Length: 357
Image (cartoon, rainbow, N blue to C red; front, side, top):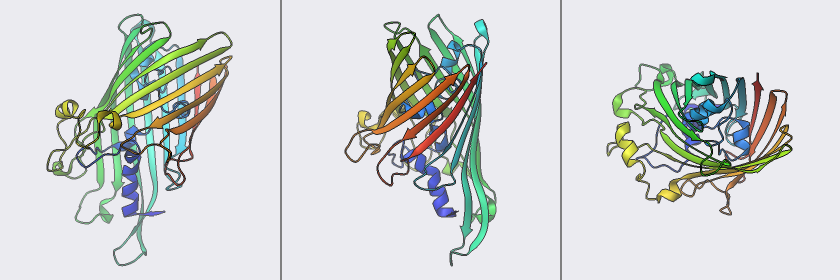
């Protein structure tokens, strides 16, 4: 149970742990940056060049072009367990190969921020209760440009409901927003050798996010992400893949605090206004996946960002661990994020499943 002030603060905390952002770069719609998939969670969330399942609709829609058959995937996790026990994140996806005509993907996200107790200024007595939530749904299409190069596009609609008008001072409408955004991805296999793949995405391209009026609009959480995957070992019994991603939020505000147009943010967002170097502002994700007889997967990885203090107290990356099982098209995965004591992300667990047919 949380009061209104704390509850709305929690809305922005996921972004704080993605990047240490100042007022001139802080975007809205930050729930779109929460990474789905226990497989990704176990590998330090390095997936843009390893997007070869239904979760590719989120990580890199271009990866769908190299998949076969059909697949359903779902994930559940309790988000920020170090802060609250009722923030739940759910993800559902479906993909289908269209053969020579490409591939389709669908995905949905639902984030519940739990029950909120609205209290008045004169005391802790509860005046009202409500539930805040956010959701997104997207349609993806991918197609090969050559035998080893593909392009993908996702069109998504997302909505955020923070609070009803009855608990908001000086407002006559609910605190709710609705926006359309695009993801664009490229995926290339056999880059330099048949063991290397690369990918890049530009996600959440969209207009400013408005709850009440355009003067208080937030920039969309546009993010550029690129990565590489190396197949270190390939045999009938054992495979080992290593992956690395680097990403940056491209969102800016003008001097008055309003959202800059997306075209301007894409050009100037690389520099930013945080006072940090580009390298320090990058979010680094890396991990490895060892598969044994294609049935058992062992995963480990790390997440690191200097400017966001996204690392252990020792300065080392935050470690992640994971395991997965596969049997005749049915799979289950578990991912775990470690962290500093009392860190809101510490002990985050992801559970997901896949059905291929």
